[in-house]
Amino acid sequence: MTTLFYLIIYDLPDTKAGNKRRNRLHKLLSGYGKWTQYSVFECFLTATQFTKLQVQIEKLIKPQEDSVRIYVLDAGAVRRTLTYGSDKPRPDKVLII
Image 1 (cartoon, one colour):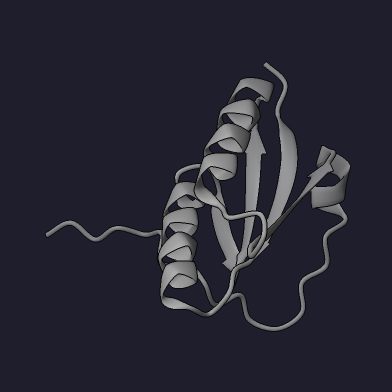
Image 2 (cartoon, one colour):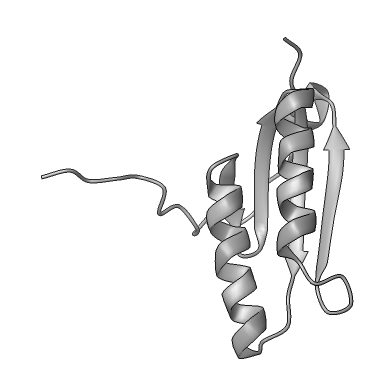
């Protein structure tokens, strides 16, 4: 099954309710892709996975206050990606003792 590269960027208000939605969105996106920058995820998804994610995002956000942008890119865009500086957000490693 073909996968595409999705760059997902979000901006939610710094309010109690906005922070709660942001945390839920972050947790949701963590299940689909890689957290690369604050409020940025990179995801390789099939069409079915993307459709499921879209439905979940639409249920979670408040369109009047929140902004989520999804860029659909091809595999070539990933190879042409340039990164400057450190890539800090990486707490997706789990340490099991």
